[in-house]
Image 1: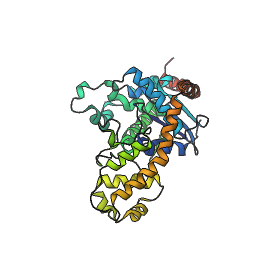
Image 2: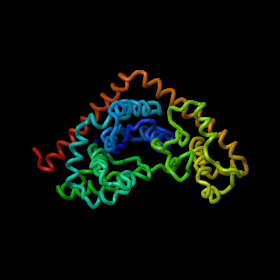
Image 3: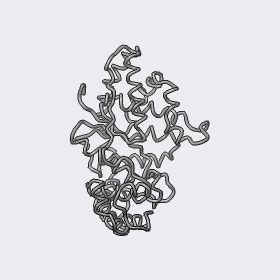
Image 4: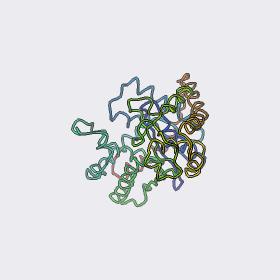
Length: 334
């Protein structure tokens, strides 16, 4: 694996993956496996930084694995496994906890967002979560990490930790400095109810998102009810930027049809939003409904999914243990 391009990324198994996960991450994962060696992880240790019902967590790990496969990830091309099955993630996280600095973690904006106003009640795990993310990446000496805008700061921390480890233990270039892979197309899919908020499974209304397991009827209903505008569609982006919900619908349609945003706006200019919604619903049903059907089919055979994870764990463990052996030697552990 030395000097090769290696991609690592993870998805939290918090259940109910949606269109934002698909366009922002999963679709990109499938493209990357055609170009580089890839490791994709269901990050169950990250999920428990906030309490999870154990039964739900178990099922969500399998559902996320099914979503990986249904969207086109190939276990024969990419390593697919769940994070907790390779103990090296937790071991390296502790070593990196001792390399990372409190001042660095204090600058992490996502902790402030997730912990809310009462930080004293947040788990320690939520606070040091970025160090575990660094461990996930550096354990495999990954060179590239596909990230959204909200995770870019954590990747920068991973680079800082890698640099400090290399310097502290006098082992220049031992850990590569992972490069972000930020999609040039869509980076954030916004809520169908509020175009200023990211599409999220935690939002109360199910009408705020398109879930990967939604049926054609459910997709139709949600797009019809999606917030837009009573006026016709403007022909320039500046006007659309003042209408975030409308811009979100056009951006999603542009991504699904693999057309530039400018071309899509030109195509839709002057038309009613009902026309855009009809076309968008059709595009979503064509692309998302088959994925949902495949996820449900895969979930009928949980032993098959567990077997995929088991084989992925075996492959990941070989790489992780070899790197950990060297890391322990560098640190002076016996």
